[in-house]
Length: 404
Ligand code: CTP
Image 1: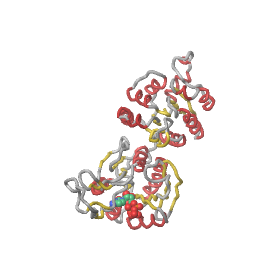
Image 2: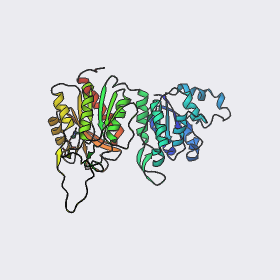
Image 3: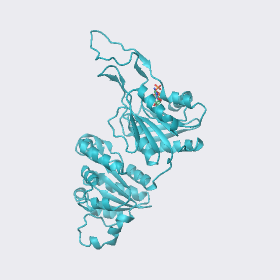
Image 4: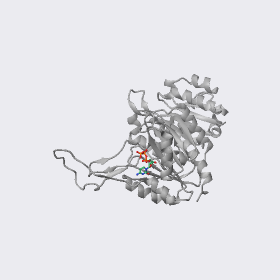
């Protein structure tokens, strides 16, 4: 149990911050709420006071505030500063080090780790100013709970919705644990699609966004691992702290993964790698249309995961993990893949479900090893990443010890 300072920003997600406070309490934590002026337009301090059973801090100018030892001590006693929702404005003020209200002053005064759950309109989130501010904060070690996608209060559909309270509370726990379970380990993760160029303007690609692989990379970093992230074309931000190698084609990815594999303790192939590429390579000039049909001869790409399995041969390290997209007989097919590619774990997705797989925030999976098949129910990809890494840590314990 720890004392958590919960900063509530002025966005519609502020009402969900009440549930975040509850979720933290259910995990045994004590919560002290700090509300910005605009947060109080959405929810009253009384709500937080009733839930947290503590006075809610709304301004440093309230009479009595500066004589109140409890509030002054919060900066040193809080074990975590959690901001939910973190609006574009709070993020910008934190990034710039502005201290014009209690929350932003507290941010500079405390030495507690900081976790932010951003929530805002999609365009505000994607704006280069916001992205630059997020990158600045990430470089300073601030951690984030990724906003979810869905219906936003402004009527748009897109990314920017506050993450679910349980997910935020789980991330807070993770920060508090300051996990070092993968310290000294080198984890190589591939993520995203690959693009096989047909000519200078066209390519064969797939609908992978990279979200699952990025969540795994992020989680491995949180556990103290050194992470090499080999990522195909994606619009998502890569986690700060990872050694990122941007690649385009399956062949590029093969080269980058094999460059990192010799020092790896774990290689996780979460990328959706193309199985076929134009047999003649990319045409140097744009292919002009003609009457009639067009056929493109495709040749098989090399299977990176199977090549890793063959390269590792009878050694136990690195631990090799693959993903499989299945629509039927999930465990059986995954186990066949496990054997044919000579890997240790296959994370099998049932892609026949609309709420799992590509371009959604949630995923359901079955973790298939040689001896076991553990069904993991539908959950946020970040939470699934944590379950996958727990399983990998068990596999690592029986493989070779850390190299560095
Ligand atoms: N993979 C790879 N190199 C490829 C193709 C796939 O490393 N050229 C990896 C993927 O990253 C993933 C796993 O292999 O970890 C997927 O295996 P695959 O046999 O391609 O399975 P599916 O995508 O499910 O497709 P299918 O069953 O149709 O073969």
